[in-house]
Image (cartoon, rainbow, N blue to C red):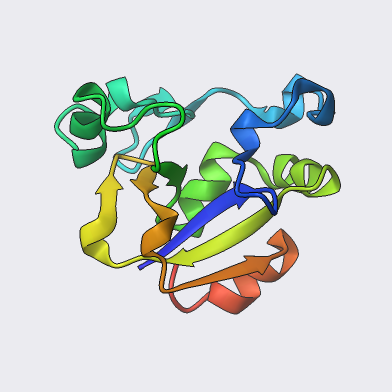
Length: 146
């Protein structure tokens, strides 16, 4: 299964980047609103944290303290749509301008902890990893993910 993640070449995710590299105005960070409609048309927080994911494998691992800062698990998205729901395209472009790129991991399903919007995984289980610009992402992966 393909997982989409924004990180630098050292594997550090964009949410952990040093504040001085994060040069985007807040308005671009999460698009125009933190409240959006989910897949069922219900208004929801754009950033679905594990406490919003009760009953999912991701939330269970989080509350059992299997996922913590410094653990081997990192976060990503199972679909391009989820990536661009969490971060608007202008935000992704801003990350790219500051040394972060989209990485596509090919992870076996059994090594993925799913949440409602994010997934967690250990990159060591990746069969293949591709670095790609967000301008090329939809073109290359249009047939496998929305």
